[in-house]
Length: 203
Image (cartoon, rainbow, N blue to C red; front, side, top):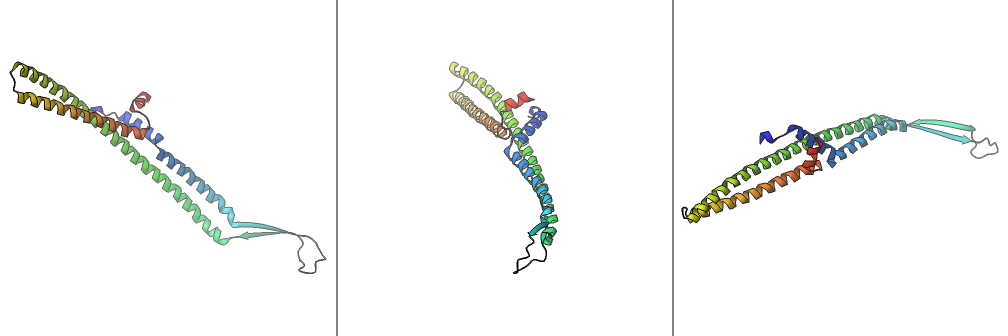
């Protein structure tokens, strides 16, 4: 089985799965959102300053509530509570970005391990199928030999029946091994979003 494993091909499968798998794209989108939140937090530092203006016309005939100051008036207000909160909000946004990067890295390692595991399982099932197919050929040749001897009267019915049962069991094992190959292949292709044959063409 070890000589069947191709590490460059496995690296190609890992690279393709990281580019294809939807959850990796979700993490990239979350990173973009977290980066925008950091920028938004930094830009919102201006929220602590309020600028107000007031225009009061010169009207000397107003007897009720007369204004002392006429013309344009400008006022600046600073919200101390918001001013104290902003650095913490920026730090929180940066930490959220860092957490998102770490989650993406963690999932990347998990995806890589899953691709390797499924690739090795696929190679194992292929090797098992080859062994069972070779055994089937051996059992078939024994069956043909026992059948010929039985027809000539040189072999007992019990031995002929045992050879038939062994051949049937070997056929069933081969069918089960073929199914394992197809299942392992499908599980690996699920991660890469393509057939293994098409990936071999890309190399």
